[in-house]
Amino acid sequence: MQKEKWDKQVKDLTRCMEKELDEKRFRHTMSVAQTAACMAMRYDVDPYKAYVAGLLHDCAKCIKNKKKLELAEMYDIPVSAPAKENPDLLHAPLGSVLAKERYGITDPEILSAIMYHTTGKPNMTKLEMILYIADYIEIHRKMLPLLERARSLAFVSLEECMCVILESTLSYLGKNGAMLDPMTKETLTYYNNLN
Image (tube, rainbow, N blue to C red):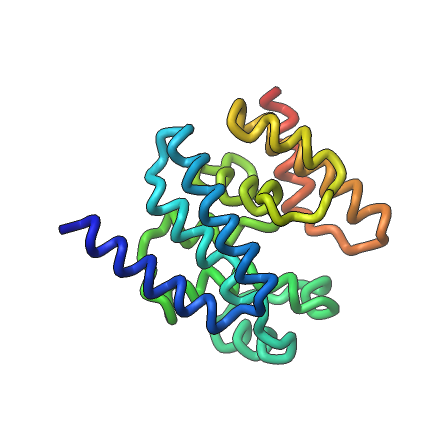
């Protein structure tokens, strides 16, 4: 019976995301969900949870920036100075709230994975790392620095793969003059110290 319930929920959520997201974002979302489920099987994590986290990780991405700010205020989501300038940075914490409020997800592991899929955080769970990595390595992703290296490590070591992606992300954002989230730096420091 549980499998039928999961299948129905995945089907319903997929339909919702197809309506909420533009075509490119929906294609990315489906690829992240599939990649996350495959990685979950490799690391002995519930593939259903990984798939649902992947399906909903960008559920707030296509909301207009003004609306993102309004929703952040409504749900008491802190808005940092960088997020005020670039409200798209709110899509992860807002997505976590919407996953619960709009889409009925109550599993704290899934909600946390969505919350930290852009910045990471020190001492992530396997599911959190899987979603973070799947978002970076999925097959439709444009060629990013160190993408091939990250893909080769994704099924070997979550922690090493995190280091590669975090270093690449910080380097890329730094070169482009983007504001860096301090959490991403803390996350890299944490994973560098593990290796």
